[in-house]
Length: 199
Image (cartoon, rainbow, N blue to C red; front, top):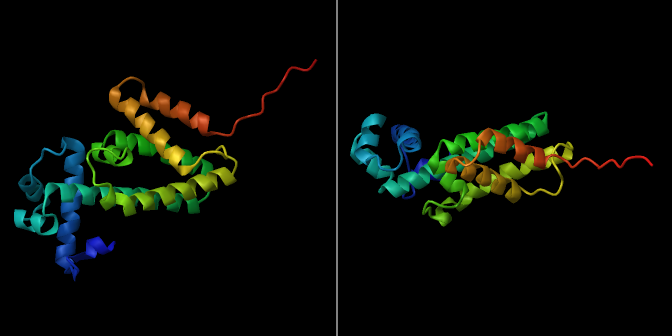
């Protein structure tokens, strides 16, 4: 739980208020991912089983709710990557993580916008969560490189750019996402030395 989750305007939240906030975030994330940002706040409140006033106490505007969702998603992605970096089979974990990122974000416009730094997001408000994500991704990448499964010249920023590229192609419908992910993953593997024919 982050400080933003446990306080509002510097005051600690009661247990029931924390539960309500978490429930609103959970429902809003699902609704925005499936139906887009046009869904009104009162509908989110209805589906979350809380009053509209409860939603507005935690999130004064729909933009504030959207930013909170993005912060949560980015932190979650970073934590997943960090835990994978601590486990075995770093190479398999890295490529599995890459594939899941493309698949999940292609189905979730909010996450895609956050990764692509677009969608009119307030970059200052999401900076800390972005750092959590990039740190986790960097840890996982470093472990995969140490294991000899990923080429050593790649950086975490490079990998994020490749994820966004795959997502952009998937959204445009110009290529099969599975094929593109396979090609990109193959390109991230160490380059095998070229064998020359013996004279």
